[in-house]
Structure formats: C-alpha cells, structure tokens
Image 1 (cartoon, rainbow, N blue to C red):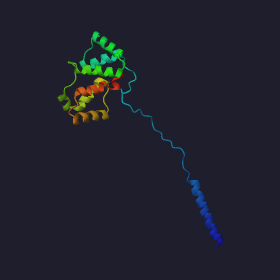
Image 2: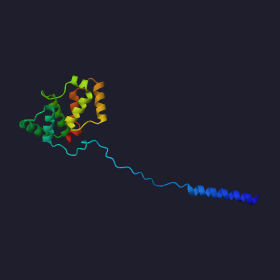
Image 3: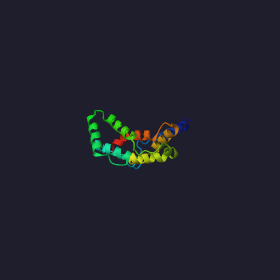
Image 4: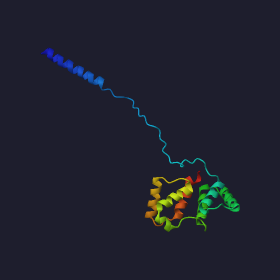
Length: 166
C-alpha cells in the first residue's frame, strides 16, 4: 500500500512538474505592422504667410482680384504698427468681409447644398478638402442654427490659425 501511495505521489509530482515547466508565459510579443501615415494630404502646413502675403491672399480670396498697392501699403503699415497681431488680422478680415464687392455665396444657395458649400469654401481658403468631421460640424451648425450665415463661416475659417499657414 505504501508503494502504491508512493507511485501516486510520484505520478502527481511528475505531472505537476510537467505542468509548471510546460506553462511558461512569453515575455515578448512581435506584431509586424506597417507604419501608416495618418494625415490628410495638404493638411501639413509649415510656412507662415508674411504680412503682405496674408493681406494679399485674404483680399484675393474675398474679391477675386489683387489688392491695390496703396491699400496694401496702408494695411501693411497698420498691421506692423499694431502690437496685437491676431486682433489686427481679425479686424482686416472683418473689414474685407463687410466691404461691398466681396464674393461670398448668398444664404439661399448655402441652404440648398450645405456640404458642397463647405467643400468649396475649404478648397478656396485652405487649398484642401475638409475631412468628415469638418463637413459634419459645419453641416449641422448651418442646418440647426439659421443665424449662421456664409459670412460667419468665411470669418471663422479666415481667422483660424490654419489660414495663416501655407
């Protein structure tokens, strides 16, 4: 009986030893995944527009023509003389938008095809197509709030940081 009991103990011990040795956790995992760039084409803009470029491009975007040298000189002087650059940019854009002759779509044309308005505006101002989130945000904002006009959309996009870069 002692011999049989010893055999069971030996078998149990060997079985436990086999389980302990066989069950070893791997320390490293190797996933062979290719690197993927997750950015939209044209969204990487590293160069800041200088004052003359900013004023000239903003004027051309809103009026479809070049700004006169005298107007550019005056605005450039005011821009450089003022301490708060963001505030003067804001005032220049607001002045251009409210000036008669600016080429901004009318509200009824926006209501009909909001997505196309957003796409066209992004292409015109940012030289790229809006991503899905940007399309959805502007579509919903325009659809749910009748007070949002094309002037406001242009103002928002032209005073954003991305507009300052190319």
